[in-house]
Image 1 (cartoon, rainbow, N blue to C red):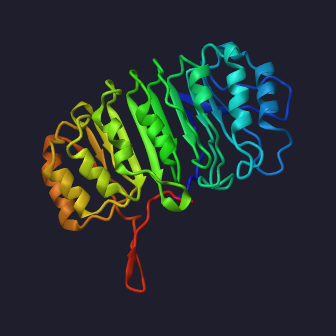
Image 2: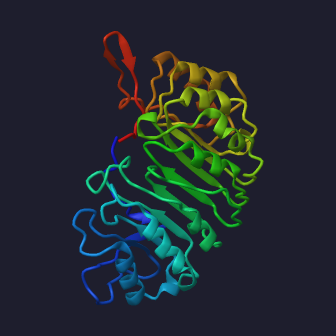
Image 3: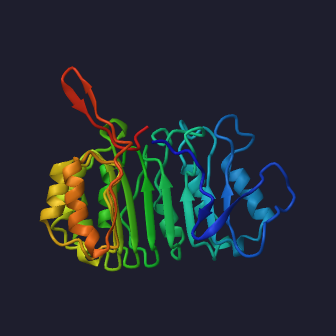
Length: 318
């Protein structure tokens, strides 16, 4: 699986790309607010991202901006997002209405997810205390310091390999308003070095009193995650659980079936899995009569055998 498409909606708003090649005020289709996508070509960019951002603030009333999608910056496979983060944080006073940020909305043609060089994104949370949604794509050099943020409702980190330090920072953060947490944990080949023990503070739910959707996905240790979820204190408060995109096998699914009740869930997403037909039927029999929407699609999860060894892969790596 690769990232093939750019976002066309973010924070419930249509995404409109800011034209960096003109000084004229950009045309906005229809009425109402939009999510502004600010990007420069990732190869041979005519300007650096902070310059494009300055042009944006000169052309659009920044005080009315509710959502920003950062696309590419110059050479993101070599240069980190540090200058992008610094430019956004420095402009915080100009952006009092900003409620949503996405950092790194790039397809594989712009830059493969595992090649995107990120940076410390903590300043985005400290500079924008009213931020409600933060999304980040790319795990290379990604950093986060544990924070307390009163208003963040959604945190999404999409990677082919998420550093354990970031997992532990998320787990140690106080996020009392968070309702949606999504972590793509990734593969060791691309920098993932966390373990299920690093997720333990998340699974207790102690610092996430309002969480209703939890996605711990795209993991090589998906069976261990499933086993931990089977007894996790946070599960009863959830409406949606996502353990998709990883190397989930019958042992992990068996733990889910044998563990605490999941019949209160509205949805359970297990797509991209390595489950047997019999286990799929057991899951359906256990959950679908209660109205749980199950996604058991495993068609894109293919086993490879080489020299007598079977290899399985997560959905998103490079």
